[in-house]
Length: 361
Image 1 (cartoon, rainbow, N blue to C red):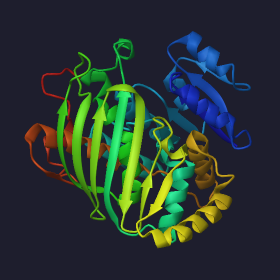
Image 2 (cartoon, rainbow, N blue to C red; image 1 turned 180 degrees about the horizontal axis):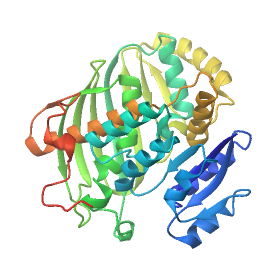
Image 3 (cartoon, rainbow, N blue to C red; image 1 turned 135 degrees about the vertical axis):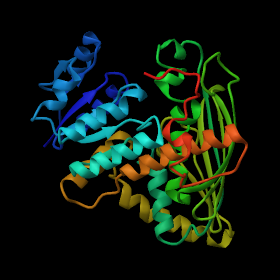
């Protein structure tokens, strides 16, 4: 049984639901939040769970195995470093860090302490993505060609009424960092890491400091080309992926918070091959019928890994690449250049991508 402390009672509520779905594998021992009422209400949902406000005390508690960080982004790095120093495993909501340099330090600390560092990318754990991964493994997808991504969500003034949102100092970035980071992670899971990027960013929807619209072009390690369209001025919340391989095209639905759990359509490029793909999907569906999805799927994989079983986990390196891509997008947008990855750590954008006129705590 793995004992977990959740730091942050906002998105932490969804994490708690994930752990509670795995009662034989996890015990949530504490909910930590400065808002005592909020922490208490959430802790009441879990057996024998304490509501606390002192993060340092929770991190120092020898009975806690995992610190799950669900705090505002500017706190992710500092809290993770304290947790690794205390010998804890760390699960961390996106974005894992506010800079490439900070992400590098977090990975180094995880390795030095021999602890797991697991970024939250729960979108990877969904039926459609399990299907696509299995089709790739069977050699039915073929070479990645192009992909189109849409992150078209609706964020109004009410959303930005939360004091830390929309500000460089506390949120550390805009739609590229806080909204599209998931869909960018998904495409790299199938096309490989991004090797170069061009970008145009703008603030067109709300009077905030950070960007809320973007048009991005990327090349990946497989040679596949990706376009990503981002806006927080959509009529509703909608995410969509269309991945074109030379053997088939994979298309998601429009579920913004769980695109992998939507029904996906897999269409053979050569119509004569469609029966083979359909037959494979029938077998795959049987294999994945009991596979958990979303947070439950990711937490189950983490438990498998910590218990010494083979598991498809999201690694600290995956989290670092997600942060490096954010930095590369900001660099490309500000310079107008096509930026190559991995980034030269000597670039100022790796140290801090926040504009120079912003005071960072």
